[in-house]
Image: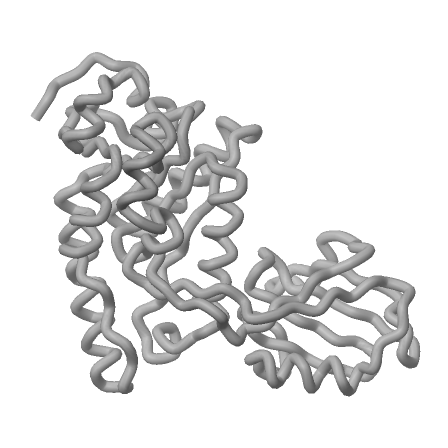
Length: 289
């Protein structure tokens, strides 16, 4: 283990990044954000559990609101979670935004093992235009959305008279479409908890939950080892592992539980943490202890 007085991880030499060297920096809480602020490259920050990853992201957005950051949530280890296509699409859209905007991605080892998907289609709805509501509802059903009494989770929709609520997993909030006959009068985002409006939109794109590509998170983060190598260390995705031994332990537990659920429900097995570690080893990394 290498002791260091570096104030930023980006001050570490390229040889340390290439080796995936362990660094003892004695940081916790918001101090973790300070040591990796202003990332010059796309970076994936891994944590032992979802609580630490979410707390890190909250601190990051509070301290550095101008610096783009995303959070890749884990798929819940339940039969419903493992089979939930909406969550897979939501995770895929998160990674697409991160790849486009660069910046920082906070995640756990388990989040890297779960499935991600890309949407198989979309429909754009604009306030003031006419739409066949029956055709729209039929499209939602055939696109994988589930009709419900109340929209509270991604992948659900509700129809009540001239009001249609849809929770597209690509967005942080569901949307409420208010019609007058076939005319779409308004489009509003709203909170699934309070049901209160959070903003008015002129237009919304609803994504299908049927998928054209299903893969692991690492397939999106680093499409191929060769791509990372061709970019050189300056342009490649960099990994920061906070408490790496705990990350490995929690990821192995996640992998085991996923496979038990998949075996009982005829689902697909999880990628191994060992293979994920080997793949990450082809990219610059530091192990923060």
